[in-house]
Length: 311
Figure 1 (tube, one colour):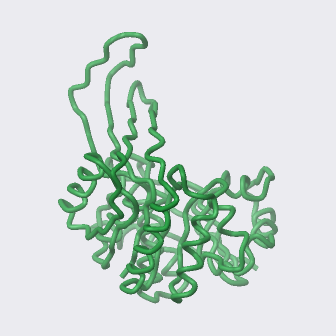
Figure 2 (cartoon, one colour):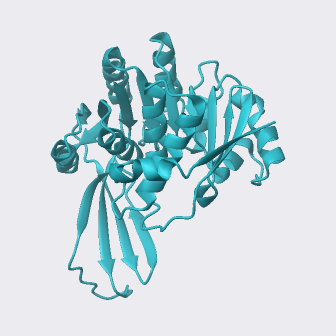
């Protein structure tokens, strides 16, 4: 089973309006509400690929209950730590071809709630063979919280795919217990190393040899429409994808993580692992909904992905 962790989930609310009027009333006829958060997107895509998944994290209040209801509608098994504080809303106003986002920070967790989650997390690991950790930490938790989760996974022999950013992500890379795989983009890679990264092959090879990444088996640097640059052990790969019609790029990285997790879970060969990851990312981009893919198109686009080993 793949255990997908989202520590700070949300209800993602989309308000499509023709024109955003400031300091005035804006009426919305169609409102879309979905269970949001990077790890929940991962769980949705894993489930659509018919792999066993369990979504976990921290939820609270009526918003948390709504998220659980939405996951249940999609037949996504879930087991969250329930808290009394209210989970968050994230609002996207779609107007004139632009997207203006209003993101709540979410609940502030106590030290005790953090401990309770770690205890629950270790219990859930008894059923898991692979863990994905996605997104940000809620307020109140220490920046080394992801590292504490990694320690528990290492103790139980469970590999972790991590897709995060900021100080909590960097903290997770500073210790001996490293993730099995990470998926930064160019911007996140630049933040981790404190330098402005370019997308050139030699620059990327040099960057991925930084001591911060020592011990990480897979590093997938996502490059949007340009595909990805990958370090697997001592080998490097350039992965390219075809030009596609983009409906909604939000969640493409999460879908990439989902495909990557599924392929690893199925013990696929390196080339197929990378092609699967890129294909699910593409398929998400082609759908209006975030964290959704059309599995009927999988084989067609899988064959379009090219993987080239680089010396």
